[in-house]
Each structure stands twice: as C-alpha cells, then as structure tokens.
Image: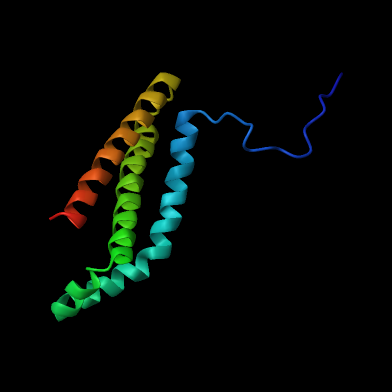
Length: 123
C-alpha cells in the first residue's frame, strides 16, 4: 500500500479555510480576548459610582476604542456561541446550513459593532 508524503511544514496562509471554520476560529479568539480584557471592564465598572472621574476617563480615545473592541468581541462571541449551540442541540450538520449561519453571524456582528461604535462615540 502506498503512503502519501505528508507535508513537514504547513503554510497556514496558503490553506483555504472555509467560512464556517473561519467563524469558529474567530469565536475562540474573541473568547480569549474577552477573558484578557475582563479586568479592564471590572475597573471601569468600579469607577461608575465616582461619576466625574469615570466621565473624564471615558473621554480618552484609547479607552473608547478598548471599550468598543471589547463590546464588539463580546457581541461576536455571543452570536457565534448561539451558532455553535444551534448545531449542538439540533444535530443538523449540513454544509449549506453552516455557511448560511456563518454569514448570519458575521453580518449581525458587523451591524452590532457599528451600532455600538455609534453609541460610544456619538451619543
């Protein structure tokens, strides 16, 4: 029996990852990001009773940017988690369903991210 030669070094930039796989990997990355920035959110939450100091802190661009990135990651992680739960509970594993739901997760996450950005910077 003939054994194929396996590649020794995989070039991840040349591998075409399907959209459902891309959404799944981003789900993991957003989860790690959420865990890493959680102490920042706790700190901002602790500043809320102080009022003026919290408002001064939220006027800095980098704080708004970090808050927006954190909320975007949380929203993406939430919707991608709903997608994963759908597959876990329904046991429907069709490629067309996976692609459709991956597109839904991306579209809803981008729209939510834009809405969050408008709320943080303009309202």
